[in-house]
Length: 168
Image 1 (cartoon, one colour):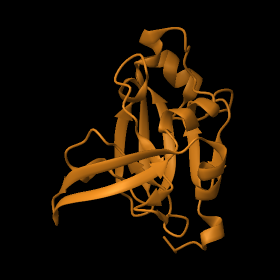
Image 2 (spheres, rainbow, N blue to C red):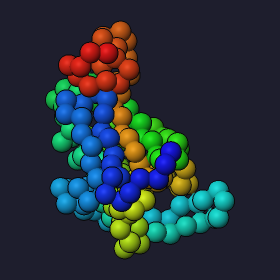
Image 3 (cartoon, rainbow, N blue to C red):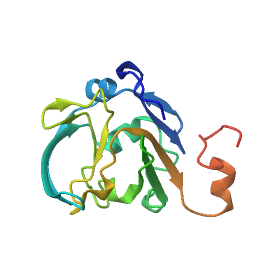
Image 4 (cartoon, rainbow, N blue to C red):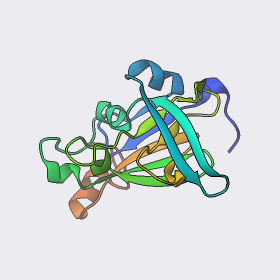
C-alpha cells in the first residue's frame, strides 16, 4: 500500500453498523472524550515496553456508528465481533463482550497519541490495556469491521459484514 498523506489517513468503520463512517485521527481526537492508558506489555521482538496512550474508547466510536444489535438484549450484543486491520495488514479480533460495560468493560482505545506524540502521520493505534503481550496493538488502523456470529439470518441481514440495509 502506498503511504498516504497525513490529511488522507482515515479509519473506516464498517460492517454491521447503521452508519458506516470514515474518521481521521484528528476527528477521533476532537469528537470523543479522550482517555489515557499507561500500559506495559511484552513485545516478542524487544521485550517489555511501557507507553502512555490517549484516545477515545473503541466502544464509544462504534456506538455512534449504530451497531446492528439490539442494545437491550445482552445475548444479542455478546455474539458480535470487531475485526481491526492495520495498514501493514496486521489484524486482530475482539468480541463486543470484551468492551461492553455489562461484560468485560475493557477500556480498549483507538489511540490518537503515543507518549504525548500525535499519531496523525502514522494513523490511530488499537490499545488493549488488559493484554500482557502487544500482539493486539494494531498500528495505522485502516478499518474496524463489526460482524455478527451466528446463522443464516445474520448472513441475510449483514452479508459479508456489509452495512444493514445495503445489498450484499
